[in-house]
Length: 344
Ligand SMILES: NC(=O)c1ccc[n+]([C@@H]2O[C@H](COP(=O)([O-])OP(=O)(O)OC[C@H]3O[C@@H](n4cnc5c(N)ncnc54)[C@H](OP(=O)(O)O)[C@@H]3O)[C@@H](O)[C@H]2O)c1
Image (cartoon, rainbow, N blue to C red; front, side, top):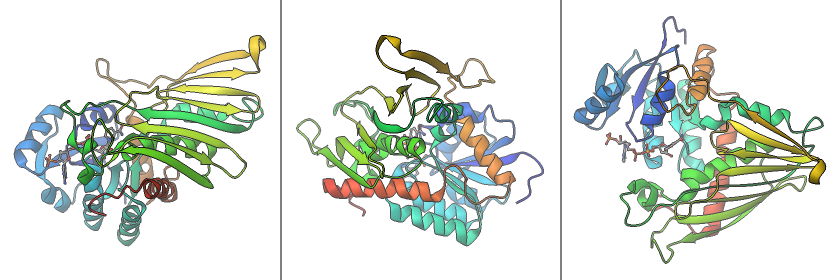
């Protein structure tokens, strides 16, 4: 695909995440947000006005548009695959929100659609593209904390049953629950840091508990073991606020990464006791527009643009294999918990 002008993006859906994603998109020069789609034109128009996007159209109209290079799909998990496959079958490149699908099988169908249509497809695991990820890797090994032996991390927040919460989070029919909403960040971060997958993964989940009585994983903890004996302990959930900090323990020290799902800071501790050396490293998001809450979505968007300009079908960073491996891990945990979504 040869792009002479800016890369033309279409927003295929108008989920709440868009407010945050658009703050990143507005800062990317090589990008034009050409149109936004919703199931109704009224809602599409509302969102187009909100973001200053020229055209408000339906999903069907978006698919037929020949001038759109790539679509971003910010809709509930259960709607990802169908929209992504349709978009690819209409020749569009796809950036689909995480989790790419509700299970590994759905991801495989999307990979096949990408291959069939020779178009780009990537899961939007945006934290993989933060500069801090490379900085963490630089502090692992001989010049830093040595070999990684263990990690601990949690990503869990609290919604109460009487709160006006997004129903997709608690709705089994929309693949609700903590694992697919935030737990995937744990699994992706472990994979990013260790650069491999576990040989064993076991977990426990609170499903249909005394407080919520909903048939999704309200709270879960899981532990992964790797080929060299590394152990990673993880928690996720929607009924308990936990500290979303990752700890990476090595043979010579450890690294603390606050808010590891959008990492911009780390503390590196080398040695032990009072003689330890502590180094604080920060890598704030480069903000080109002041006055907006800039979380760093531009990194993944710039990466997708780069891939498109190079004519790639697959990101070299967020590969199809990695997405498939994470969804297989989710499938395996859910099988242990006896958690099947009604549409599976
Ligand atoms: N990267 C991140 O940090 C991050 C953060 C939050 C969420 N996410 C991901 O983004 C995705 C969207 O989350 P969200 O909270 O933004 O979702 P949401 O607000 O519940 O999404 C609702 C939107 O999805 C559209 N939609 C299309 N097909 C649908 C269907 N079959 N059922 C219901 N809605 C449908 C709706 O369309 P209409 O306009 O046509 O009604 C509406 O615009 C999720 O997969 C989530 O995991 C990522």
